[in-house]
Length: 434
Image (cartoon, rainbow, N blue to C red):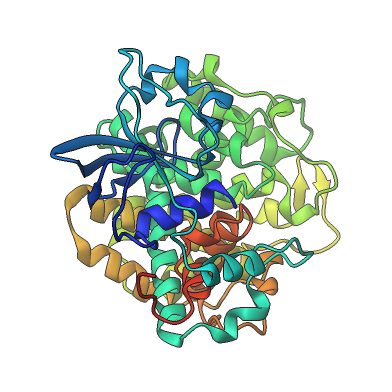
């Protein structure tokens, strides 16, 4: 028996409620089981119970054994003073546990009140295995409508979760959508390796400054490379000298000298020439010049193919031949490849559209995000490959984003009982109260 399973039983009331009594013999009627708490504190908030002739409002705590209350130190934690019922599998204490005012906390034991098949199905699902997806061999048993609904829930959950940070940024920057969109784009252009360095650059070099010079790519390039610390050396190359001169002029004009980063902030080890941060910055310069009104360009976009063309704009001629200052590449280096452009669009456009919808109360923006996601091919990575051959759809980017969310947020931490697919497998046929 596990606390997670007991919490599942309590949340959905999957136990025999006939003649329900506390360990002290008091009658219980569950009016509302409460809201599940996934953070510190009692397991359920705002429950409503009828115990004997009194109606109680408060929290519920779940343990396998009553003694675990003491084992976990809840008796000295005031957060548990508002617990109105201690739900356990079995009561292993002769004396009741009391609050600080000496009033006993009622205990409800569920042992003998649960359909054994529920536990058997759950135990089978949770058997230790080398499979990264615990239910992989059982997915064929799940009705199609549940799989489709689960995929929809996961993509919506992912969009909302990824939009949270954007809304926090938006509050910090007082509704400056352009700056927030620019920060997200820059971080994503760093991909995993240089994401934080790119975000730091976007915070040090405000979008409003770049927009003032967006009509001149050389100026945008000079600001990005200079502020990133890549124009500090003595160069013999005329183009780099031009960038250096332009940067120092603009840095003085916009008072940026003290905000410049150092080259050590960037990672280049074991990196292909096309992915070097200098080239990513040059590609960012090309993109920002191509879409000078960045936020509006994203929220008003109607075609993924048009946006993909913008995201794949090649950098200036110098950076098509060089991957570092004065380091020539053996082959021509153009704009972002199609797969990288798709990844950038997925991680930038859709969180922005979702945040825009939530901030302005415009649900049409979320529908638009879902429709546009379906225009992109499904991603191919280590996670999506785990779902190949399983009965969840993987036809477009909406599908791949759904299975990535499902894998990261539910499969990996073994949260099967908080997943509609896992719940379906545990419940089996529709349940009746024992």
